[in-house]
Figure 1 (tube, rainbow, N blue to C red):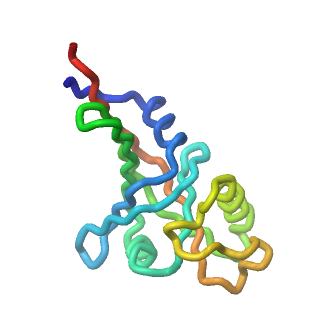
Figure 2 (figure 1 turned 30 degrees about the horizontal axis):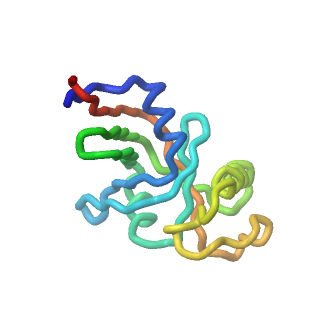
Length: 150
């Protein structure tokens, strides 16, 4: 098995075709990693969550990383790491376009609200909810893959 670096375009392709990543942030000075569903558009990953430990952690320290994996066998895999910054998309003036974009991107996929909790109500009615839409900038991206060495 040979492990090689992936170029930026291949990394972006892998991130775009997948929906599940592992979000890493810092909570109370310690690493905290949780699965999230996301959707990619340009240089951002859009996601949704209910308030909790990860949202509190990202509000306190916006620096995050997301790991995306494609594992076929222990000898054949691809991994991509995105490093970027958390940006909350609150339900208020000035964020409507970005929040609607997040809703539109995420809702193209079945069960997009999982593992965030329960399905959010329509965007026009979401003003009273605790649901948190956010995006992660793709500031840095890198990846590796294993290939057979025969």
